[in-house]
Image 1 (cartoon, rainbow, N blue to C red):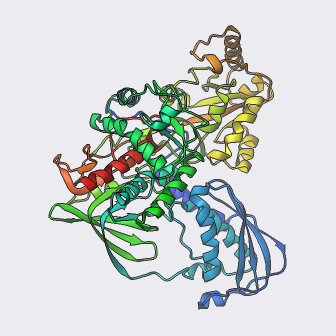
Image 2: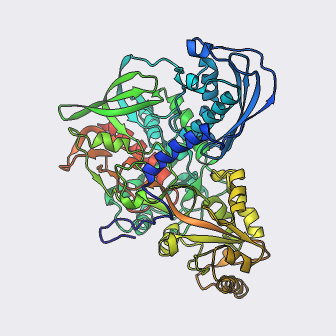
Image 3: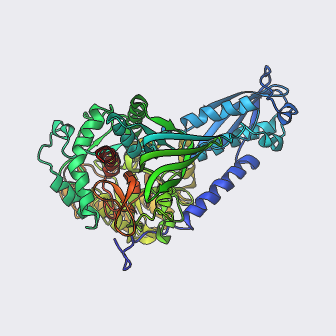
Length: 637
């Protein structure tokens, strides 16, 4: 939907403020609270300790502890992180992470590296790991409190540097520099190396992956061998373009959506056969309302599985990969982009020179600078590192890149507000219970939409409801199935138990009652209205027809025995739709409508390919396709 100004009509969740500012304030406040308040509980579990590295600096060597092993719990991105820390009389000797619910592809290395650094340097002055900030904060907070419980001096240990910062300046040259190590950047690097070009890949976090690593793991595969193998041979680029224009409110940039549709099949086959990405052929193509043909496949192992294959392909390609390195500015000479200035987390300054630069830096969902007020007041569930870095570099004075459609983001209708301004998705569980008897109701207890409509259609209805919110209405059988998928989308089991215990008194709302009448009372709904909604749906199952058009396998089961549940569904976004203006060779265009020599872009940093709204599986497909095509354009030129 568009307002009179052409911007998306975004919801303003109850109690939310400026989203990105609030997120930063929340993260800072949380880290302080975790360290200094009762939100962290530590207790000694045994005595012992057998000596260890006392560190090489004066502050560390002056430490004294009550020997023993202490247990601490801090809050990470996915829930509680529990550690056991062992002390000798003068050193931290061992740190074990005994339980956690963090996303494996994001936090695994942080959970391993940070404890090792604390032990090696006898220091709490460790940096958070970019890309795993909340996980790092929760982990350090738990360890910090255990230091306090053991009688250590926290202030002193925080002043101890975990490592000395480098003052070195390193100059490197290559045929091409790729900035950003997500799906688009990895595809570009792999293809460039395959075509005989030497590549430097710059990634600001500690590992390659980006948004594809935490995505639902689905991809558009129109025109691929895999789509034909899965049984669909009559799809076409023309059909895909038509579906995308309809979904994107007819503002998809024609040359870009046509470029995508005509090349995603070949890219899919290349990613599968050359880069080793496996697809879930057993699960088959997905039946989605957004598409006139079945054209979406899941990756084997989801987004994490695809990412591992792409990481390995980058490694095998021989590309020079600089992790924990932030690109800060483009180097321009005589109107041509000839490189990148970058800074390593260790303090190293990099001056990187190349004939071509590919910006694959992702979106701007976590940036105040580029978000409209409406988006700042919406729920965000994307990567903390999506701060518009590529936009900042490309639009800087002297480069002067143009942008478009910056007011749009991809909104989904199925978020739960787990912290102020931050959402987690319930979509995986929803997909399991639509063939059962789960329905969507509004705050008045009325059913208002076909639950198997497209996400875009459901979103439009949701935005019109009280507080821009719907609720999943489930009986016990449905809830038991639905809740099995919560952990897969980052919900912590203990946190969910807390939501249920709160029973609708806090957000996210996980309300429940033994009867429909009791459930309605929890949220102040009219019991008669909610009961009538349930009765009407069940009557439709008996009749084989539904007033909202729900049909076939999705209209087979009645809403059955209680207890009953209402779970909030709010609009959420991670992907931004606007970005840099590029031509059909993925060259970035300046404000005068001319290509900027030497500068290319791929993935989410490109604006306009899907208009106002990307359908399911589209973003991963575009990232891989545009990364490959940018590489081929560079090789041609």
